[in-house]
Image (cartoon, rainbow, N blue to C red; front, side):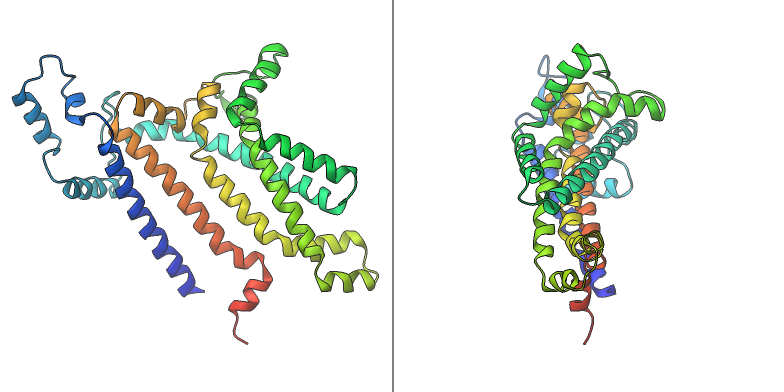
Length: 317
């Protein structure tokens, strides 16, 4: 187990190192010269001024040297200073990340509870109208893009009915829940469809096992069979998919935060790209990639603990 954890952690650091280089190189390979933006535009820009800016920000050094300097600063939590705002990038992230984290957590609770519940219900009532309703409803939910669903929710529950606010993140726990309900539902719709489908199929596959048939023949109540034998063996793929979807949501908040006017890291990334604010764009992308890799690694480590069959394979005979 210790060796397995070591391999996973080594893979995590290697992935983050490769991703950080791609992010750094991709941002500086984008159209536009960072030195021009740092110098205040092309108006009255002289070669001497441009050379001075390049030297000041080390833009005259090779790309690998620039990357090494940037990575060293990142390891010391020095993410640079925003070109647009003039503030420390770390301060901008600290101010906006809680909103994104609360949105992702809220959406995760919704799609896990509703998606897993719908999948279990469809698997238990397989072949009936409940199963058909769940499959049809999740197919419709998966076919609607999140930003389209968000606009529809705003039009109906925000404008027409006035039940929920359509902008801002609110204050306090109750206010935050109230403001983030519509964006969280909009984010959770597509994920709910995926999780319910995965849960249904995992439950069906687990229910077809021989030991389940033996348990039914032994007269064990169906509810006990579903809970102890079917759901337990189906938890592996369900938890794995929930983790992957949650990790992907960190990078999927851009559209939702734009629709609902939330001040999170998604909207911060959009503004940084539009204004060529390279330090902010690099930091946000690195944070998104780090969150995704960490979550998927944790899920990978927890998976054997949830699936007793994998634990039996790892254990010596």
